[in-house]
Image 1 (cartoon, rainbow, N blue to C red):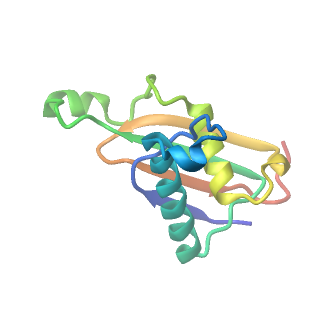
Image 2 (tube, rainbow, N blue to C red):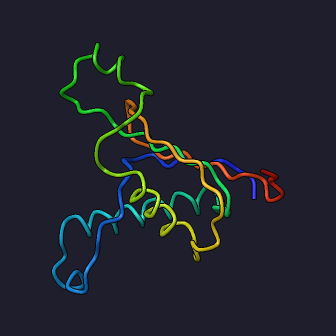
Length: 129
């Protein structure tokens, strides 16, 4: 499965969910479900199917309060604050894979950017490490 997919929008981490989320409708959970709908819809429209070996880049939007000088300094540099990269990876796997236990290789990074997005790139099926 070859291909590259770029989700346009702020990356969202998968929240810890509990049984009461079915009726309590916590904002963090509702935000995650909305994200799941958007990324699934965009991937389907692009004809993208996530494989079992892939590279993912999370581009986290910079705060609007930063000066242009700071934005230029941060752009493309590592994003080392919350949300955690592992929870964002869980969200992508949950949204785009039917069975995420089949994933065997992932290269993942999280950087600052002018706008939020997720860039997914499948590795070839016959990838030899």
